[in-house]
Length: 543
Figure (cartoon, rainbow, N blue to C red):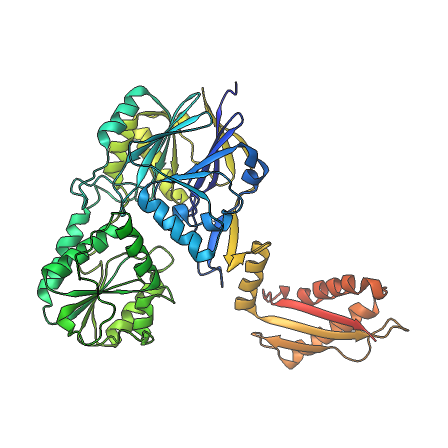
């Protein structure tokens, strides 16, 4: 028998998003989550970033199944891109799988075997047994996982909070978590997203109260409320308030309409009869509330289009109160505030978190993380789901609660740990970013690097011909610049370097490609001094 359970980190550590972890023992592997990371400003033209699954491809015969903690994009979003590669069952709760089905249909991906579970269910996958445990989060169907291995229990918190007044009445099952902790937990993987926030997170119910105060204070205004489409508890409260105050609800944004349909179909969203309107039509402002996508300033979202005047169904003006029921994800601040500024310019009154209690987090704060650690009482602890600073702070909390420092490890992407009698790094596997631009890019790092260079420094296209008989330049080269300030002096310098390089290099027709690489290297040296790095494309032909 193997002496340790391998824990393989393919995403979700040292970063926010792209959550994916695998457990391996002997001939069995199970995968926990398969998410995306949203593209950053330094990834131009990229739709999504997904985990590198090279190790899983090489060991696909061992993979017994995929278990999903919940249905947010950073936990399920990569599945459609890898659907054709995983011929294994995928387990999740009703809303989680409903959202997976929707994403598969959007991409036209091959159907994977989806198996619904409920909180409290236990499944067997090879040598692993996985129990799904109810936890509160910002969407329904979220679960922690108690994974029984041949060497002990691995407890995965997933994304969670401890909400004593949840909208659906389903609290984090602290009793069951305590029972599992009493059995003895070998290893805990604990989410770290909000570790820097002191105290405890606010209940989702508080958002309902904050939103209701806006309904009451603006009886003659049209209300436009932007929230994450997947935040079904938030949407539920808006629907209840619309019914209470006699307003029709208009859904704006493709994902909002789609996710509301899924949540309603699986019973996680109760839509009052007749409350949804197909469009605003001639409805007076005081009779309408619009629920829109676009809390993160996404260019194609409904709210962003409204702020630019490009959304045909809603024209924003002084009769509107716009509510952003969210906080900006790190990196999205500028996009979000651009939208807010544009909405103010159009005369709307804009309310966001800094001004009112219109958003609460779905992630545990420091005190809730302490409660979870105290209940689970793991022998070994690994902080996950956060940047390094979050993981570091979570590790400090674990130490303060009595977990020995030598039993705590902060993992990084691509690292493989063996856990049993000890917790030690076993090896490394290929890992990192796989970029999606409509399709999965084969050499994504190079593509993104070129795009960054193009955006920052521009491009130089160098056209030159050489005489076949003499092997020397035939005339002068032509230099075409795009996004680069090509002065006469620089153009002369480039022409001189190209001429000297070609005339000083032995080549034949079969080695023109190599000559182009030599020319590219020589021209690039011209710009080292000024720290400029344009994309250089030499095209050399033979006369």
